[in-house]
Length: 259
Image (cartoon, rainbow, N blue to C red; front, side, top):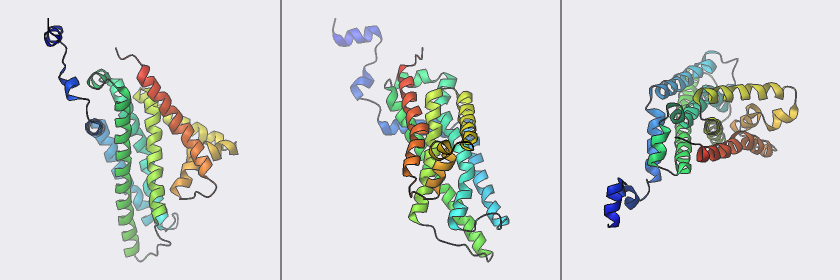
């Protein structure tokens, strides 16, 4: 019996093997679609957009309570984004496990590390898009404030814009890391917020935790483009909240039984 006849008899499809692996760009496109084409994702993204616009009204309507600076307006735009974007990122990593569709995904692409990497890439694309949207909303808010006769102090530098982008991406990656590790949507979301709250409370009693672990402090230095002497703290908190759980999540994903 020939080799081709044997594979046909056994029902083995050799077409994909002959054609080669799925292109990574296609994997990223598929993960992008999964992240944006569900009802829950659409609602969350709509909430991100609407709350970003809504928050921009705060410094316009209450100028004495908010810094009337370019960076001040940009920081206001980031508030709802860092609340909701990590949730979207978590769902990108946990949704298939919760709905058991991960079996189909890993059947189509058995190399699980490529699937996880594609999800991370799609999450970063989503964070970048949110940053662009936030920048546009900030520009509109500044335009309204200026048109009303208000004086906006300072200027918006490349460093400020870069810090804003990195700040959003770090928060998105924090959600990605928790989702990759936990694999359950509800548990991952609860763990993400409860751990952040717990660390923030511990930070009030410990300067070490506040300055080295609490991302509300360390990543805010990134947002403020305040790197002077803070790079080690930013690196340590990123290691704790992103690198270690993401690596552990990849290992768990590689080893977990999907049967």
